[in-house]
Length: 261
Length: 282
Image 1 (cartoon, rainbow over the protein chains, first blue to last red):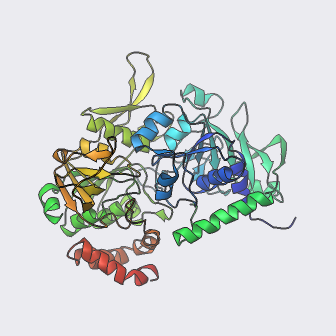
Image 2 (cartoon, chains in turn cyan, blue; image 1 turned 120 degrees about the vertical axis):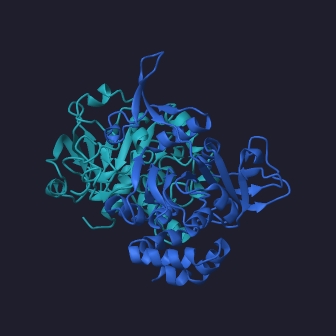
């Protein structure tokens, strides 16, 4: 089919669709924030976006460049302190969905954003935890959005920053984590979901025009495909238009493009 | 402000400079570099450019943090160079999560030795940080994380307004500023302006002057971060920092020219305006 949209746009649209209207969503900066705001501007106008800097019910007219941009505070229903957001709202059990990105992800959807290489002598020092460890453990469920590559989807993590399903099966439940864990991982090639038994990620839906071999070649482990693996619905024109307008407004407002690292 | 830093920030102190993207006390950070403080134990949830500058300038020997990136841009190169290559000197790090550090400031403000939270279960943090431990709830038997409270020698924050008595008002994204001030032995606040009356509603975030050590008027003192109601974030500078800080030589030349050889923050701001074009498009 014709490339009327980019793989990046497909990923963002697919991620946005996962957020149901009315859900209370704890949003990470970057790709998750783009997807959550696209959802809010399309099918989920009543989604409540919560940012770790304290805004609850943020409705930013343009995408925030940082997690604490002023437009999050100005458009929020209320702005609380950082201790309050983590203690009363996240730990208090009021978050339906945690929406996260990841530097590295393994087959059980555990996340590394800390180091590549040994902890005390890292080859790459990544930014670290932020709010993700508690979001991944305490939100009722978690959505993860990442670009699909062997650098990101790796066989083994050097560090588990935020817990998915640990070693799979019932390991997460045994560790005593309150939330159900990752419900889906959305990439620019496909949608992954945990197998109900093993909890290993498997391909649930392939984006239009993507070959299975491409997914396999870009995954650091032997990726399984679900039995009823289908094709992702291509972005609708309303979704694409809304996303592109949002990005154009954002670039104009910030004077710089928003990197979605 | 120079006098307040000279009097209350000492070599070897533990120092928290808070402000969650908003109201980051950059002017005070520059003054600490200008005065050549050394061996500081820095604490900050998001080191941001302010600690990238302090670390690269050789002021710090230790850092407690929970997210060390350049927001919306990428890496903090001076922070990474210190951790990966010990430049300009070794930097001991203590890494926590946002939730943990936020709780740890609350515990510090409440004069408690540790924070308790549901956190870290299953993660690798306890493996690399033996100060992240478990505690059993005496009532339910539930295992919870216990972490040491943060109680800095000095906390510095930036706020919008102070009145004649040194009472301070801040609003917008508040981060952990109030908790960081109340957790510290000494607290310095820089403000955008002094006003005759704060005109604050009863539940506003007001820090009474008697709970603070020093209050200094430093207009635009949070630049290049922002001050809600006064000026917006200088996203262009945050982006330019990626290039300025990438190499040791360029960074050192920048610190020398913009901080060490300027008299104060107003002079820095003036130079910044004059050199904005060169800084952004090297």
